[in-house]
Length: 209
Image (cartoon, rainbow, N blue to C red; front, side, top):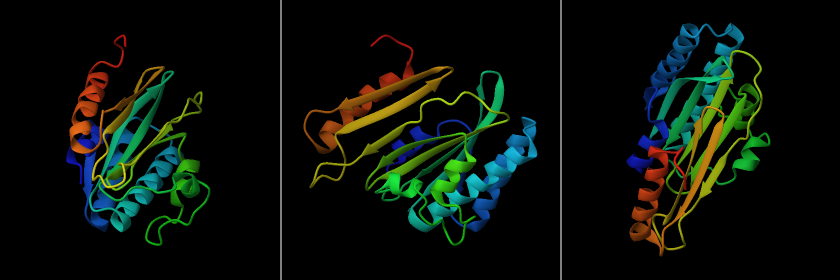
């Protein structure tokens, strides 16, 4: 498990560690409470609880450790909620196939990632093979202009435990900042400077290159 990467993924928001079925319910309740606080329509809140249940149940079945975070977002004056599901599993080896309608979890809502995508207004991925996965699903109170969705797909060099590359994306209002850092060499020695570079971007995404 890469605790620093998971902390990066879920920074901010009301978070729930997913260890058992009871935690799935707690995460759903957190999403519902935030939706009610924002006065989102009931249909939107129900979609959010379905998204949380599927993503959290996937963590129980496939990951060593998972966290669900929910946080308020806003787009063009329209309130919404972003669900962030971060885990320390092996990563989704074929995210495209999963979104094309693969079966959902028998213990979840049964909607799979393709169903999560249908219930969300936007979906972003950050998948690091052998390390973990982060899924960000956003749902708004009303229709909003669709913006670019992002997928980061990473893996380490053969024979290495960690990758010497790093990447991130930051959404600030109407802007989307993408960053990729290629540490020279391979493994932990290359990973550290790559992560430091990404940390600089995350600390000030509006700054000039």
